[in-house]
Amino acid sequence: MARSKEFEENEVLDKAMKLFWEQGYEKTSMSDLVEHMGIHRRSIYDTFTDKRTLFFKAMERFGNRTDAKLAAGVKQAKTAKEAIHFIFDYMSSTEEGEPPGCMFVNSAVEMACRDEDVDAKAVGAFEKVEHLLVEIITWGQENGEFSSQYGAQELAEYLHNALIGIRVMARTSVPKEKLERISTMSMLLLEK
Image 1: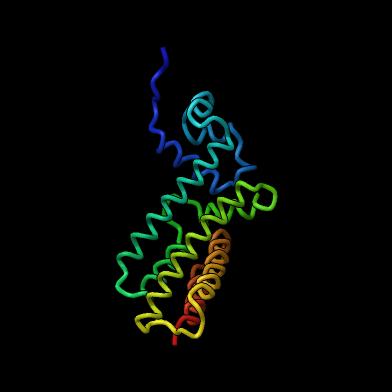
Image 2 (image 1 turned 60 degrees about the vertical axis):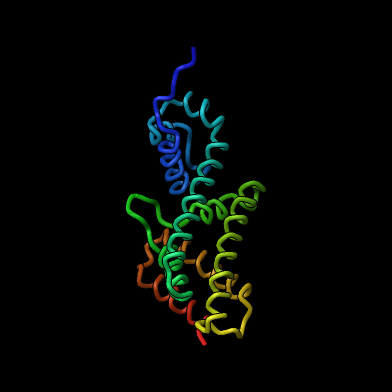
């Protein structure tokens, strides 16, 4: 007779996600995962198959969570400028109890050049953010908030590049004020 799980899968997946996010894939050992997830090694294998599968499930969880937070923040924005500000603020801040930066950016830097699957996940996540930026910039151009000197796609690519830089810098000891200045300067490109 099979034993029932004595843990909530999403709860332990969140713990694995934070560990991979903070340490990266290669530095995170199965022993680290057992300790941080608070479950037995056998339970990890039974539930998630192996470390690599667990890592990809953690990336997916991170992506779904980030997508939901971005969508909610943008939905509450009354203007396109407010929506862009929200995205920059969200990307440059660290919620309590969470590692700084972005799991996709960290994973891309660590592994994308030698792992096609990590590359595909990171590129897919980046494309989602760029698509969201295109929608917001188009909204701002149509209602006269933003300049139409450049196309929405080109502006989104530029802003996304700034956001990736901010997410990398957020992992360092760079002061938050510097990240805010970079955000402000990046947004000036949108103005008329």
